[in-house]
Structure formats: structure tokens, C-alpha cells
Length: 325
Image (cartoon, rainbow, N blue to C red; front, side, top):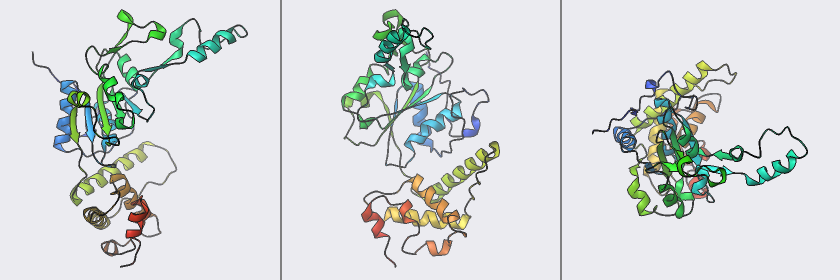
């Protein structure tokens, strides 16, 4: 029987359903996804496999998951992996010490908020566990920077991110027929920076893989800028904040900034190339930091590069654009 895809990502955030889930992102997430990336997301949803994203820092790996959740109106749960993270933590944590404390405290105060006789009062679901417990729809789960953990971490996840999509909690007796089983398999998006080399082969075989390239032309950068300022304008129209709305730069300044930024990246020789987030911060400073926007004509060639501290995060890179032309 042909498998049908109920949820389909289009890259058009205006397709967001009106009856979105309360745990879905409420703030518009501007994101420009190309056709191949959209296809990769939908392949992962269709095949019920994790989508593994790689690419240089600042290329938009992490923000994609929030954009998908926003457009589809689905819950979004984020798991930031650390060097000490264990796969179990994404499912649940159990506080046995707090339970023991409450057993003793109950002898003095019978009006505790928790019931020590009920072990479920002391387990807390992680991002994956919350997604497994949803009854009405799947969730988007972001496992961010999976390669920060040890090498066993990805393979430990395989036992959960596959049939029968279930896990046990021995501390609460939720085992066997009572184990936690997903009614709706979550849509998993995983990011990696290859900090510790390649991920294990069994894990890679399980994933749909996509490498996000940095936008290499000024037209794509302009599209990102348009989406960014449009989202800011829509957010400000829905809020009653006294914060001033960021002024969108002129088309000439956007074009000059894009060309200079791409020229810096193409020149190579940098220890760390600046990404999209640095570009947007730099453009914002060019437009609004001083009383007048920076001259778009001067920007094309001038050194020292204005506001270079926003672009470069290594001393050698910073010094390279500090000298006068």
C-alpha cells in the first residue's frame, strides 16, 4: 500500500494552519529553503527517518527545525546536546533523591505538592519523551549538535528512533505493556558540525542526509534579508512593545554589504568564515548604529572594514581587515 504523507513542508511559512498546536513556535521564523532542502525534509517525514543536517556554522541548520514546526503548526521541542549528554536524558530524567526527601518531609508536613507514593511525580520527560507522549499529532524534535556527545550517543538513540518507537521507565514501572509508546512518530531533525569526526556508520545509515551550503550569491542574501525584516515587521505589528522597529536598509546598502561580505568569504584565508547571523548583525549596524546609515559606495572598498568585530571571531581575521587601504 502506498504511504501517504500527511504533513508536507513547502518553505512557505504563510501556509501555517490556524489551529496550530500550543507548543508550536508562535513567532514567525524567517527561513529561505531551496528546493532540494525542502525535498530532504519531506523525504524524512515520508520515510519516518531522522534528517541529519551538516554545514558550516551560521548556515541555518538549527533554525530549519523551528521553521518547519512553525509552517506545519506542530509542537517544537529542542534538545541541546552537551559533552556529558546521554541518550536517556532526551527521554526522561528521574529524581530519586527528591522522592527520598519528600518521604522524610511528609512525616513533618502532610501537604506536599508531590505524592511520594507515586513515582511518576518524580520523572520529567525530555524533548523526545514529550514528543512520544503526544496523542493528537507528531512533534518536531531538534537534536542540536549531536556530535558534542561521546561516540556511543548516536547509536544509543537508534534503539528509540525506530520501530516500535517506544521506551521503558523502570523507576516508575512503565515497562513491558505499560511502556511509553509513541502514538505519532516524531519528526526528528539532527544537526552536526563534525566536531569529533564522522558519526557512526549504523547511525548514518538510518538518517536522511543533507549538507546545507552557505548562500553563495548576493541575490540569495537579499532574499534572506527581505525575509528577516519582513518577520520583524510582522512581529512588531502584533506586539505592544516600546522597542523601536529596526529600520530596513536601502537596497543600495543591502547590495553593497552583500557584495563585500561575499568577497570576504571568497578571498579565503580566514580561520573562521562569518555566517548568516553575523551578516545580519553587520547589516543592522551599518544601517542603524550611527546617526546616519553607512555610505554604500564607501563600503565596497574601504579598510578598516566598518564594524568588523561583528564578522570576525578570531584575532588573525580581525587584524586582517584592520589596516587602512
